[in-house]
Image (cartoon, rainbow, N blue to C red):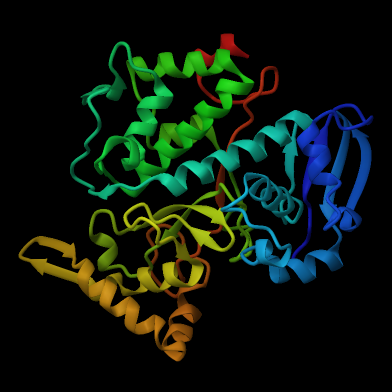
Length: 373
């Protein structure tokens, strides 16, 4: 059984002053199972909240949160409040402590995760690692990336880019860049309500130069878990960004097939930006990555993945429980370190989440936001 660290909330030890947080803490389905510890350290007063070990063992055996919504009779797809509650309980189950500088930041973290899930569910794109297309509210140069044209606002421009029910078409993305746009949209939506000055600074930034790739991670995200202290293979919080690694060295050489960046949507589901209405389960995602090796094709120096072959192999394996079990035995292992292709699977040791974002406590690493704090 993994340790249960849950969340630490700093600030006054009096009553919780956030309505949402009070509602999550007091839900009859788990209120009696929450352990609370109060203390004071060098940084000041804090309150720790976690689920009791015996409760956690029943609801998330071995730290696996993928059945949490079903266990608690939550419907996170139909009800936003149920999604927030699944997020909150998953945080209470965390084997690594989440530290929040205030109750407000904890509530904002739950809200922005809910926004990530809602934005990701609606996102449908065309997979392409070589070309990128955007609506005409964006302009591109190699020096700036895609930036907003004058007169266009960040939130509606991101929505038009990600959601074909608004634009009427699919725009080309890699999976990594797609996750950046979803994160940026959710962040901007939350800032519009809770930190407008930061949203204005964010929008100014995207009028001059896009932040992307490693810089995006450094500015906006915090990573929890590591190869030295890995998270349980089934521990996910809705709104997590995570990577499934392709453990096959040959097919991983094909651009875009090194692995797969996704969001955890809750209720055991992960994003599939390329096929509307067909989110992955942990099983189907692992099986798909396993069969990328079967789709590998070469034409001289050029290599590619034949997705039709992959799709057929996946269907065959998922229809055969014994074959699926054999695949999962390998794929559900922790991934090997970078550059190593040995006995590891596709499961990463860490997950990623947005940093604090409220006035006075935000820690987004963007210098131009300094005046917004």
